[in-house]
Image 1 (tube, rainbow, N blue to C red):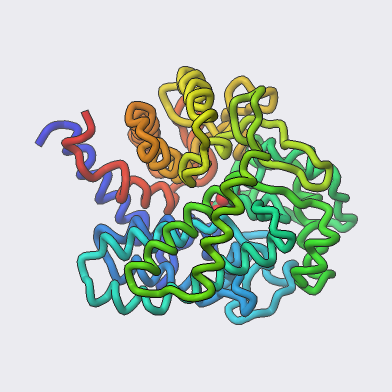
Image 2: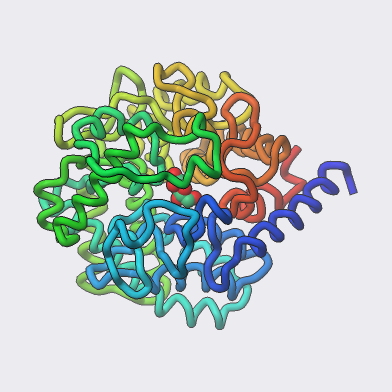
Length: 433
Ligand code: GLC
């Protein structure tokens, strides 16, 4: 065995042990303490991590998440399967009272893409066939919900109501839109800063507004129509839009394979065409990047973030945008051997260590690399893969990584990073050098 192979073999064992340690029986917490429940897009990514060594467990990760799906079709952002007092805001603040209990918002719908991979790559075909027939109708409901409730005016661009829905909670992209949200007028005690240094976490002024929105959803009785009309924060998030678009395409491919074709799949097809046209609204010719759009102030969210590269993953980058976007990416990647910072290093709001304002997240990299590969940019895809591997070689399975040093940022022993190592970064050692 070469030295690289030996190191990777050890890391594979460590990554498996990380998932096992975070497994609470049917679902995997992102990390103990800081995030003690089931998170939506974390679980989707984590299912990929279970896939190479425990296929039934991979499917179970998805079905436990879907067990919390609302009647409306929404798959919640956090599922409170069991009590924990190490996290705030808990179920009492959200006020949902479902079984299992959950928050009242959602997260990027990467699950459909993951399910397609599970279905295609699972060796146990009987298991895959059995699972897919239950999961596909649930995914169809979820995607229909996205389009109908989050884009009731058929604009082609769904909206998000909370920075936590983006999963990129503290991205500078949300700063201006969030400023329009009032602050809560009640006292509370945060739990995140008792686990992680405050220099890596959001400020109080952001938390006050995050909580205002949580209160607002409860006061609106979680009614999709009322929230759409009155929510003070309403953003076309380019990452959600891209992930949803790719997910719908992947879901429709699975439907075709298993012979599901009906009014609902035809509706989803139409929605894809709408987004393909509407995405132009999110392109900025000055920054050569896609941006999110604040529908309240009618303006593009200014910050340059890695979300702006996710249209590659969706196949939404047009011919005239490809070269400018790639030149921008090449310059971005010159800043650090670790890839790719969540905020562009030349953006005025870049902070290499603070939550979503600079640090590197490996599942974002995986999606961007896949997209680049699809567009034929193998060199850039490989550069991102190398930059991601450098992060885990430097500091292990952390929540995220300092954009310039690859050091830990956020929590340690993190499930989605271990999953990306197992599924994407560590297998196929021969292809690495
Ligand atoms: C943070 C992240 C979010 C993630 C969650 C659990 O809130 O911003 O994307 O899902 O932690 O890992």
